[in-house]
Image 1 (cartoon, rainbow, N blue to C red):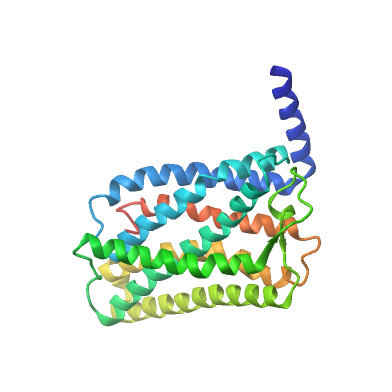
Image 2: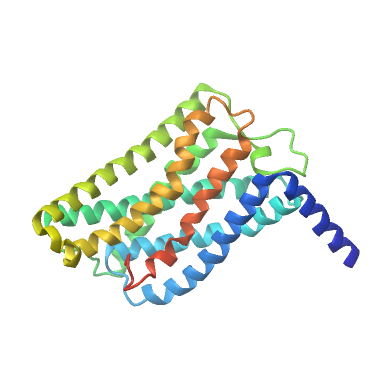
Length: 289
């Protein structure tokens, strides 16, 4: 047993040193797993006392999305350390699909939060609240249904299972991009939609900050309105830093997939760092809540 463990460590260390992209992936997923798990545990105690506003409800749903995804992250870490997959093709496909489902549904909740907050600013009204638990449940289920009904069929169009599954390789080796015009169109449209949404939200945020600065000038940083917008920037920055790199690279990757699978996997792995948003939300004065 001792020799087996030593051989595993030696072989893994040698393989990692020969493939730097695997070191990057192990690092990314380890940070996401540890940071995300700690953040989720801490956020639960913060949110359980207030689930009325759309923001807190959306954050609570984000915790569920992150929790489901983090359950399979250890399998990704093990695979990239050992470079061996022995858990079957079905489980490999599920783990592969979950990372895509995770960032699509999480992105949807981010967009909802920012959209509602921008609406309240322009309409000059207080944040929308739910006063019945049934409404909270129905609102959450509606968003989940939209994300699942749109996201997973779209993912199935983009990917197909490799017929040459060997029981050793997984993820980018098992989930092959469909080489069809339909798949390419879906990939382009999904990336355009996400990039366009981020761009629109960024423009709204910039316009709101400009209006506040014009109104208050040098005293802007002391105003409550500016404090609210700093919270919005937390959501926006997570979207920009975690989701945009993968989708921007996708435009090149679609037509040049050969030889760039590893780069694509690293950028896809960056979307997992959105799980760290819980630590940002727990910043000083509960910065993003």
